[in-house]
Length: 359
Ligand SMILES: Nc1ncnc2c1ncn2[C@@H]1O[C@H](COP(=O)(O)OP(=O)(O)OP(=O)(O)O)[C@@H](O)[C@H]1O
Ligand SMILES: [Mg+2]
Image (cartoon, rainbow, N blue to C red; front, side):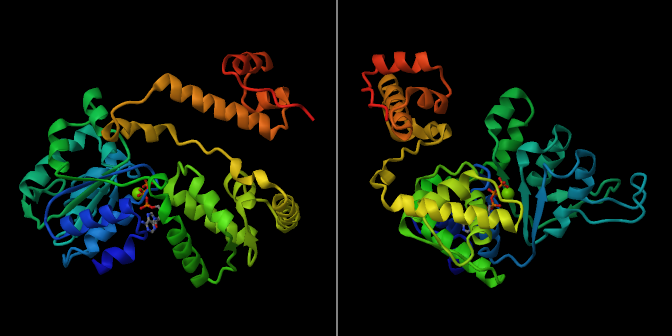
């Protein structure tokens, strides 16, 4: 479990569950299928599985989406000398290199149809043949696969073999999104800061409002996006104190400034914002909405949702906060919401939203 703790950071309920599953499966030879959004830690979990498995061989990664399909076969299975033009010598493939270790097939959803039958056979028999070779090579194989795609849909569309799916879907692990484990954010930030420190970066400090803002954000790019934000913070705010406004205006929304001068300018700008912010008691009134994909799992946990009521509540919240942000100006609020002014007025009437006095 020590190795797992070292590799997978975080201790919220969802992360504890994840680590438990990893510790349960890592000692078995079973094939694992890691599923989860981009940047949520599929590579991290694959490493945790391998390094806590006691397998003596190495962890070998293959990103099926990154290798051109015509090269993938020889990359996976190796080739004999003369197997094809350019095959000047015999070469071991990644299957062989992972013997007694772990083969991590990343983005398995992108495996070309033409290779899927051969892959299925290798998994079933734990034997492979190099391209252009006749000899069967026995392997002590442990497979971890990952995908961010909906493989079931690919099966329906005919671009993924159902029999291969059942072979790899032995022990599926769904990795939570960062929004689902946002209580881990302070620990993750601390870990990322320590890492940056070890590279000699002048690191910033995050005040409580900054940590709260990080927890409220929806993180479509998950932990990778958080890592980018922290790295950006160390460049833009070295040795400075970062608050929620800096997070929202300079670290999540605004792209990196181009040069030193711009950096200074940005800092001056945000220093003013810090002052403004101190007098602003409305600071906590922001409304952060969940990512639409987070509703996907709704009915696994809940029985009902009053769709019409919920959607109109979302609409009311967004309209009210747009009006508030624009000090009651309907014209400006309608621009923020990307709807016509007249549409906004109609909606306000329909939803009984009070007009705030413009000032
Ligand atoms: N639990 C975690 N603890 C520490 N670091 C993490 C954790 N999860 C993710 N990371 C970091 O976040 C970044 C993205 O993680 P990773 O590459 O594993 O995501 P992924 O799911 O494989 O993404 P993709 O779908 O793009 O391949 C990496 O830098 C990784 O170190
Ligand atoms: Mg990955």
